[in-house]
Length: 566
Ligand SMILES: Cc1cc2nc3c(=O)[nH]c(=O)nc-3n(C[C@H](O)[C@H](O)[C@H](O)COP(=O)(O)OP(=O)(O)OC[C@H]3O[C@@H](n4cnc5c(N)ncnc54)[C@H](O)[C@@H]3O)c2cc1C
Image (cartoon, rainbow, N blue to C red; front, side):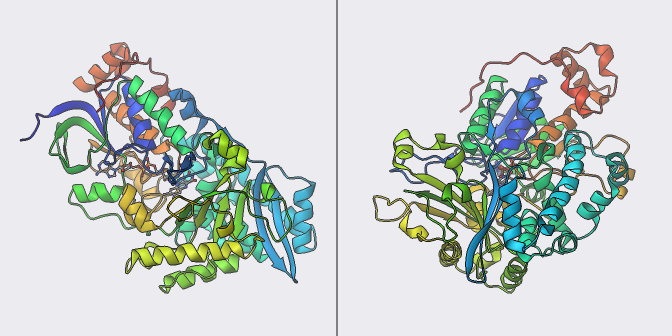
């Protein structure tokens, strides 16, 4: 028998970090909000787990570094979540002329970094090119980052406002592969720069989709710095759950939405258990492909996911052939077989249906910056976690025989890494009670099965540039947040929204702003009731609120006690 329908102002489908951000903003504005999450635990791609039961080590299972989460959201929501700076940006081991060495890039340019470039390239030219390139991008990042929490602008308007037409051209208009080839001469340096364009994005360097990925990797909080989440990614979700429940959000795990109807008055959803809920607005914080399926619409076209995630616990850090201290090499992003030509070769091979060889990857050690994810006993014994992200391993390589392909990809990743290690990785992996080693490998198909990422795409679908296409601006003169759909009651609130993707909360924030802006822009009973709930005077309600700032400064509804979260 079906349960009676419960009514809410808003239903959020998907309890990933974006869903929780959206829900909390709405609840703080006085809305009744329900979050429906398919899995047993909220968090989606931002969770921490103990994958090896015999060890007290909580690893960030999927996402692992934070850059895009605006300080503004942390402050608005009052979450107690810290990210820590890494002293090293990256280390890339190489072998040239029978010499084992590595390109070290410190978080702040220093003499060791300059020397490292010189040893690799024989002059100071490449190091100078590096500094100039990233200095230019930083200028754009500083100006672009604050716009991520504002209504969208057209490309031409945003370009004019940012006032850096040459940098804009390099990042938005010319394939990033061309830009990198033009600015840098060394294949390895070119590859290190290119990495940010290919994380989770299965394209050639000459595809503009790579530019979008590159852009999002360099603008976070205006610095593009990738920082370590203290306590692991699970710490972010724990805090988001805390503020959501304090604000009165009702959160239901084990509630996969399997049916969706929409009409003039709002939406109705049904979960796999047959329970129905109705609301005025629906914020869809799972992938847009799932929304399309629920609405009986064609799914948006998208690249498939193309990465391998490997989580490991080691008894000690492996030594490197270059002789560098592993605590330095693994503190930042450790690039392996990621030169420009290796990326292009790996892409061509994977497109041809074969697993890349050598497999390009990057790795880092969370516990060098933040040991709190390990028990004091493991820290005392010198244990560490290693997080490996393999590139250009598209879902299609795993379709025929998922388990065999996963094993092959894992073996290739370790072989790729071992090229540069004195101690093969296998020799330092912590032993598990059942005789296995402390390593787990997740393929794109595993991500689809475990957390519903379509074909394992870590951004749900292809990333968009953070501005409106010129055609879109003509459609409406109302402010657009990148969350709107063709149904006035349905909004995209997850990574698949424009400006979504990555651990940022931006999509959740913007969807909540779109809902609130809509509620406040008309003179409907709903907008009046919203005003009453938020404590605004009626006269203020008729004023059209079209900027995040205006909405953010609404008086807050009092936090409500936890409502029956089951
Ligand atoms: C392996 C990996 C590594 C990554 N590394 C990083 C990184 O280091 N830094 C970074 O910034 N980004 C990283 N990303 C990307 C980032 O994690 C995601 O883009 C982001 O977390 C997406 O958040 P979200 O809340 O929009 O969606 P998700 O986290 O995908 O959450 C969506 C939720 O919706 C639920 N759901 C799906 N369908 C339904 C349904 N029908 N009914 C109810 N619930 C449903 C899912 O179970 C899930 O909990 C990584 C992603 C992966 C997979």
